[in-house]
Image (cartoon, rainbow, N blue to C red; front, side, top):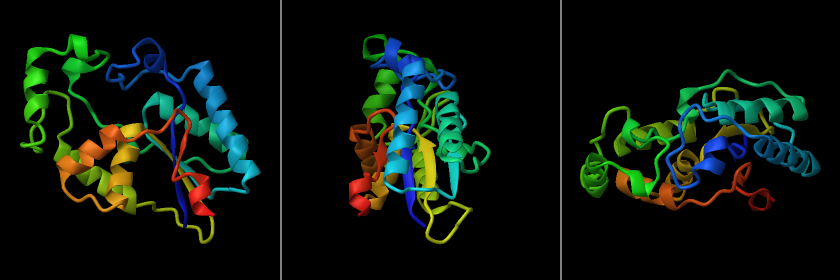
Length: 195
């Protein structure tokens, strides 16, 4: 079965705090809903009829998934934390680099050397790696010849992409995930790569 990963549409934090760590509960915007509708249209035009839509539980992704499932006329699975975004520590949620507290700056400097470390509310690089490995290999709803759509977040999709490309250590997976570029409502792998 083909798996297509779709980044959620633009969220409120994506507009009001574009360089900040998005808060888990930030909502999808009207712009984001329109982006997801356009992605559904593109999928239909390319003949992609998924068997199911899977999603992160964060509202910006869950609502994006609801829109996709409705427009494509396919089932929507219950939200799954496996597909959630990397959990930045609580002390930086909604904050950009200029507002990072000293404890986060220190942790950030050392996190690649200590991938099991984290701060309150955050997810270690090792935990992200383990979750991305599971997300890359577990679907649970196989239907031969049909695609599964997973609505998720840039860093998790980037981690899955890095693992797919052969990255194996948590620090290298995280570094690749941070650099991964995927626009809101973007599809990975690109549909052109599947042809």
